[in-house]
Image (cartoon, rainbow, N blue to C red; front, side, top):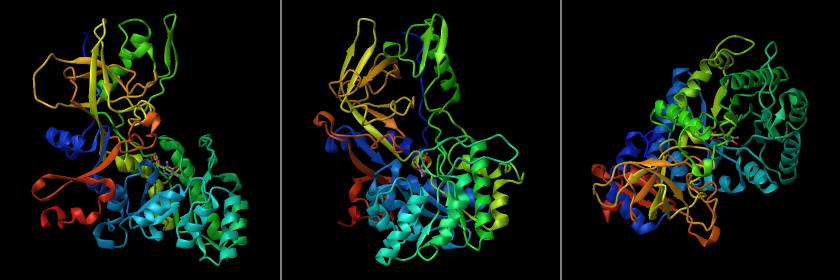
Length: 500
Ligand SMILES: *Cc1c(COP(=O)(O)O)cnc(C)c1O
């Protein structure tokens, strides 16, 4: 075999310590089956603090709302609900909230302990979703003029409290520059904001415009700077009209750095190109190119994968964005917000789940082909482990059942448990430090954001992964419970496991 091409996952201390506990992980899968999702609720609390630090550094107030759609876990949402603002609620510390995008998520957030003043509702909304949001006093990021009208009508018809709205805008442009924000199927075009404000004024008895919002599915700082400055311009117009907006919500999309080593990423993409051009032996299943292909010695297409190595991600990305100059006004965006005393709301999904979970899958069978390739069949499928689906290339970690030596590194294709040719968990050869054996586990790290439960289903009546919440008990020993059994008092030094 040629040199292994590793794409080692970035691991922070809590996840690394858990992976260093193979007997604990094996006891979990023995009890709960494979695949198994593990979430680390204390990690999401740490991640929130890092975002709060960025707010504090820029002296900004506002709210960090977890975009619930990234993970269905109750443990993560309950852990967040339990968080008080840093400094015990002193002015200036960013509050912690949740952003819900369906009726089910709203019900879940309320049931996990979030009061409605900490919840925002975004995304497509049916009447029942709008009704429950208005009934409870949840802020609604209305997606269109029609939705604003429908909400106002609901409030009037049912005698509901005045609804707080933060219209979602999209399609920003900046005077004097050519940057446009990309097209979105969501939101109200920024150049139609005036008509929207007319509508908000018309319905002022039933809706209160408390700010504006956007969410751009991009990592481009310049586009976000254009959108943020454009939003401030709309807020200024609101004030001119006598409305009293307080905040701008800049959505999510802060990203995660998944890989430990940028050099491995460079080496991998270089070798992938060489393989597709026939300059080395293949490193993907049937010459799969992740969007690239070689044609008569030329590379065509575009690599359609998540840039796994992303040093400026999460809170650091927010920090850089706030330091960016406003495209037309020239002052840093944080200054622009401070001058106007606007609060900053953010909705990180993926970034708040960074290092918050992993997916375990048991090795069922290992075959070696005539060409020396290892085919490793797992008790899990590509919907349980959505890494490939989302174009994220990162290695799993081998969690041996027994410590035995053996053989040195191998390249392996990971096959799922569905009776489908397409059910590959990896379409590239994944290099492992030794050939796995039946009974070993592969741990897919950092799956809590979109990978572990977004697409999982009961295809072929295969089991959907159970979810366990894992936390450190007294003395640092690992404790676990089913995700739905987790409540934050378990980690507050009030450990029930010890009391009984
Ligand atoms: C998906 C989504 C988010 C979260 O995006 P991430 O990339 O996970 O941070 C935030 N806000 C809205 C409105 C969304 O649709």
